[in-house]
Every structure is written in structure tokens, then in C-alpha cells.
Image (cartoon, rainbow, N blue to C red; front, top):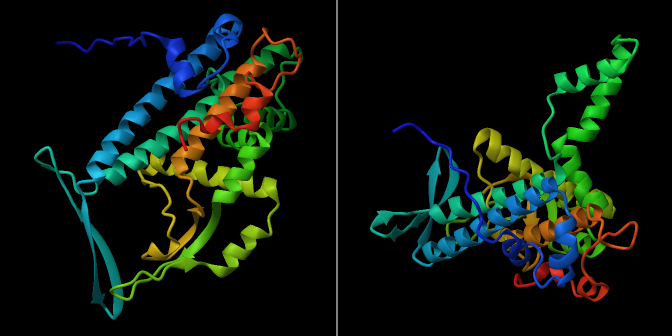
Amino acid sequence: MPYTYHDLVTPDELSDIKKYLFPEVSSSFDDTIFPSLEKPVIKKLILISERLEFVQNLKTLEDDISNKHSNKTSTKIQNGIKICTETFSCTYLGNDFSGVQFDIDAIRIYLLITCLDTIAGQSEYIDPFVFILSDMQNDNSNSLTQEKLESLGSLYKESFSLSKNFKKQFINNLHDNLKNKWIENFCVSATVGSCDGKNHIGEFNKESYASWYNKNTNEKISSIASALYDMRSQFTHTSLRNISPNLDIRSALKNHSKHLIRLNNIHLDTMLIATLRCLADRFVARNTNSIENSHPTTIFSESDTSNEWWFRNLI
């Protein structure tokens, strides 16, 4: 039969938005804030909440598969070089699911980062050529000099460059408490990995690790945002998977260039969801007409913010 596009509809969009993005938000969100939002804003919230629900369901599957896995580390000498490998085995629902938990983890991280893309990006994509033509039509001189073209290029990147807007979300819009949480729990550094056949002896690259701690807060946040965006781009363009960072740096089996490293017990998916909630909150606040404050930054109370509502039901 011919392919038919079906427009899937979420039965209760408002309920899902509150459950996955704004847990325990005040009743004013239902009564005044949500009805005041324009369709493009609501569309973003719906898309993100749907994806968060999917990510949560994938986590349930990932945990179930992980519980049925076993792993083994082995060492061999090849051309005079010691090579360590770690193998996993798992039978799930009668099929070979060896290593599938890593695939699920990678797609979950990827989907969460693309949700941040959704917040950072424009509601609609505009082709660069159309952008230039539109400007020329508004310009009575109808001429396009090199200087003008460079100016338009900068303006286009400022408005539509996803990587640049992605970083700006972290630097300009993320609450200071969450910035501190990122810096307390993650860093970007190179690592050195090795194995003696029985024990993992991975460690930080000392120069890279020292360089990290010489950065100021905004530089660290920018580095973390860049690392996350690189993870997203690698998956999109080269199918390179990036799994959640292991807390135990000693488990590294080989050298790695600069990458995101977990320092404490908060997992990457938890930080991504909390970050997404905070940015979505500020996105809604900027786009609502129902809040008396002329420059609102949140739809939550001061008490909610002090108690870091972004982590509700996550930790």
C-alpha cells in the first residue's frame, strides 16, 4: 500500500508538558500562562515533552537489559603492544543483545542534546540564499558588495547558527546554580588509559586537567557546551556514539583527546534534563504576556528556584 503520513497527536499535551518539563508548576501555568503562549512556543514545548517521555521509556529498557549483561576484560600482545578489550554478553527476549545498553544510552544522550537544539534554534529554518534575497528586496540600492555580504553572513550566523546559539543558551540563559552544578560534576579534559591485564590504570592527562582549572566559569561552561554539541554533531554526521561518562576515570582503557568527564555522582542525563527544564522555563517566561513583571526570567516561585526545582524526580 502507498505510504501515508499520519499526524500523531498527544492526547493531553498540557499534562505532558507539566509532567516532563515543569513538574509541580503552579496552577497559574494552566490558567493564564499556557493559554497566552503563541503556537510556535507551544509546539516546541510539545515536541520536547514528547521526546522526554521517549527518553524516560528508553531508560527503563536500558536498565532492564543492563541487569542481564555480563562483562569480561582481556589482554593480548599484538606487535609488541599490549591491547586491552572489554566484551559484553547478553541474551534478551531470546535474542543477542550484547552491548545494546550502550546503544540505548548513546541515543538517549543524543536525543536530550537535540532537545537543547530545539530550545536554541529558531522556530523555522531560513535558507541563507533566501535570507540574502529578502534583505536585497528591502534595500533600495539593490546592490550586494563584499562588505554587505560579509555583514549579512554575520547577521545570519547570529540568528541561525545552531552551534553558536547552543553555547549562548548555556552562557546567557542558564541559571547560575545549574552552571555551578555542571562545573562541580563535569569537566572537559584529555585522559590517559591503560591496563596491566588485571587492573585498569587510567588517569587524567595532567596538563589538560590543569588547564581546565585555570579557566573561569564562563570558559568552563562554554567548554562543556562545546563538548555536548560535538557529541551531538558526531552522532548526526558520522554515527559516532557517545555514551554517558563513567565516574571511575581509572576504567579508561586507552588515551582520549579532550572529552566530557564526570567528576561526581550526578549522571549526564540528569544534568541534561535539569538544564533543559531551566532553559524551557526561561524560554516560556520570555514569551508570555501573562506575567506582570515586564522582564520575567521564570514561571516558578523564588522558593522553587532556591530549592532547584529542575531536579524534581531526578535525584
